[in-house]
Image (cartoon, rainbow, N blue to C red; front, side, top):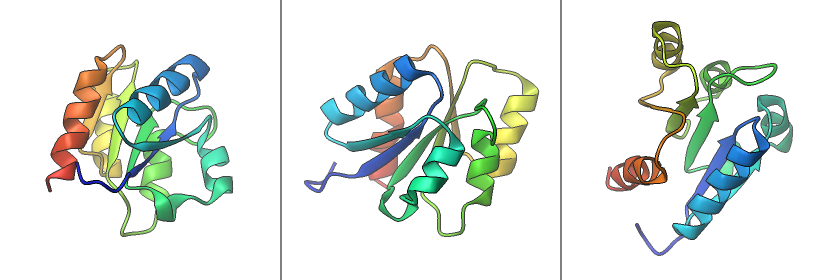
Length: 121
């Protein structure tokens, strides 16, 4: 990873998971901003600063895939996370343009490995 901190935006409705992800990413050297819903993220208007998004698939209101599909190009890459690993979820992520989907619970090292790979692209 370069010396400049990259900003990762987390949109996750579970408070404990959101805080854990934020803590993990900050310890790994990223700047991490966290929101409890797609609506809260959109209201904050922080898309310009995001290097990558970590989006929960099942959010109250607007879902993670719907939020991502609505973003204007060029948009940062997105890593989706979900508790519901099924064909419908995988299709929603793929249709939105997501390249990665981690199934909860997942190891923090799995997320960091994907981020490291994105950093080399």
